[in-house]
View 1 (tube, helix red, strand yellow):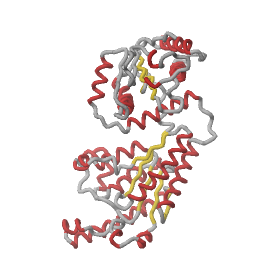
View 2 (cartoon, rainbow, N blue to C red):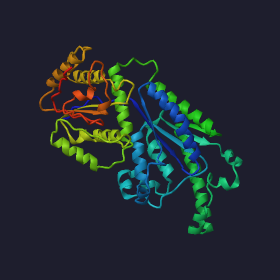
View 3 (cartoon, rainbow, N blue to C red):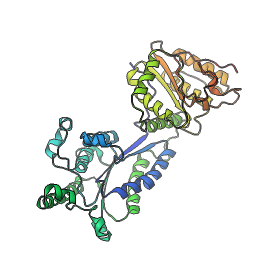
View 4 (cartoon, rainbow, N blue to C red):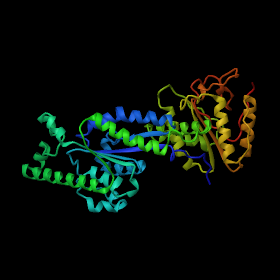
Length: 412
C-alpha cells in the first residue's frame, strides 16, 4: 500500500492538444504559442491552474519518425490531454502514412477501417469524433479558403492540395494528380463530418489575430466554468501545494538526461542514506532531473510518504517556516491530526517531529527539497539549509535532502 499526498493535478490542469496539418498551419500555431496561450497561462496562473499546450512539431525526433513512431506518439499524447483538443484545418488534408504500425492497429481496433487516412484525420477521429465525452472541450477552426487568393503563387502550394514535385517524380504526373484529387475529397468529407458531429466549429477565420481571439474566447469559457474567479478561497497551504505540483509537472516535462541518473539516485535510496546531497552548477538541469525522478519514484517505492518542495515554485516557496508548516498541514490532514501551528521556529520543528512520529513505522518518509541552500528563515543565525540533517559546510550548491523518519531540530 502506498501513501501519497493528495494529487491535485487532475483538478488543476488544462492540457490542450493542437491538431493540424503542419506545412500550412505554421504561422497559426506560432501565433497561438506566442500570444494566445501566453495570455491563457497568465489567467490560469492567477487561479492556481496549470495550462499546457501540446504542439508535436517539436516533440517527435527524426529517429522516432524513421521508426514509425509518429502516429503512436500522437495518439498517446491525445490521451494525455483529454478532454481538451483544438483542431485547425485549411485546404490541405495532410500526410497519409504508407502503413500503420501493427501495435497501433492492435491497440486501436477502429484504425483498421481508416488505413488510408491522414495523420491529422486520425488524430481528429481518435481525439474527438470517436469520443462523445469530448463535447464542450473540443474546438475546430476552419480557415477561410479565400485567404489563399491573397498569397503569391509560389507560396500557395504550401496551403492547398496540389501535386508536389516530389510526388510527381515518385508517382508520375497522372498518379500524383489523382492522389491530390483524392486528398481534396477526403478533406471535404472530414470537414463535413466535423460540422455534422455537433462539436463547436468556428468557420472562415481570415487572420491570425481573428483565430487567436476565437481560441482565447473558447478556452476562457472553459477556464471560467471549471475554475471560476469567485470560487471558494483556497487555503495558503492548498495554494502552495498546487503551485508545487504544477512546477514539478512543468519541470519534469523538460528533463532530457535519460534514465542513468535515476538509477544512480535509486541506488542511494536503496541504501537508505539518511541524507543525499546533489550539487551542480546553475542551469545544468538539477530541478528538472529531480522533478522527473520524483514523478516516477512512487511507483518504484510503495509504502512511502513523499513530501516534496521546489524553491521557486511560488513567491513564498523559499520561506523555511512556511515549508515546514505545509508539510505538517498535509500530514495532519492525512492522519486526521488536530494541530495548532505556532509561529516560533523551535516549536514548529518540535511539532513536525511529533507528527512524523505518528506515522506508522511500516511507512518510510522521504523529504525532497530542491534548492535547499536558498531557503530563508527569520531568526536563523545560519541559512535554514544548515539545520537539515547531514548538511555539511562548503556545499553551497546543496539542493536536495532525503530524511528517513528522524528530523533534526536546529540549535537556534
